[in-house]
Length: 408
Image (tube, helix red, strand yellow):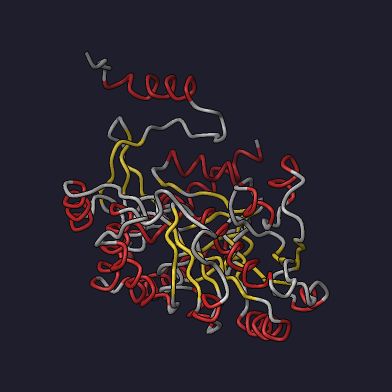
């Protein structure tokens, strides 16, 4: 018989089970999320939260989306999983839909962003293997995932040190400093990997001129350019992918998070040039990659993005968010700077980020940090201007209360 809990005991009952059963890799907030609607989440006690995290930039269409729900339910009744030794009717359609909006030529479905990065690195090394190219250049302050390959190209020693030695042949340049990359580039370099917007690193944006020079440098040395858009991709910049905003096309593009609107799915996409001399049958695989449920989530997501004109909406709403964040950077001493574009924004603050995040939770607002001193705003892409206004009101209160704690 299923165990029953009193309503007021739900949080305690769940968290006790969680801490008994899970490896402790997350320091979690004392709240149990129960359901979502639109751009709001509700906890087990029914309390409402304005979500400006969207599950780390995942739930870009918000919560409880009828069209997406119906498509997934229909696929569940047909087929959940089938081996990649066989075709399924959804994966091909989903791949073409993603390729059309990404501007790439071929792709491989994974289950996560980290796996997408692993595949991208393997594709780059295979591409360069015949010419002895194996070195990888990444950027300081970058974050590409927690698997061993992705961790090896993550430019933050805090994440790497306990797991060394990692994959060899990796060096780190500075974002927006082309000379730092030139110093590392040689004939053995197979690729450069860069986030057009560094998420975990503090919402640091790659400049257009830097990306142009990076593209030219890669072409000069016969190296591939990898754009990691796991977080900044799929509409968040005001374009389907941030490289389109910058006007510099990569050879390999990684994506995940938003492409499935909450269902675990990722992908790496390549150009025809890379496909000609890269991964072949037997070089790579994924048991669950491109399964019918994941492919359905991707296909329906792309359809809804087009129907709702999400990138155009993000461009407009993002500018409004920028104006509001700029306004407090102008009058609140603890807000030093705004960064980002579209609906991937950050503010650099002089008060502890964790204090602000905790105060915001008390105000019914979900926000997260990025780096040591930046508050990150990555809401569902369907937010309206009134949601920005509501967020700003709660944010100002949270900043003031956090600052007050420092003076006590």
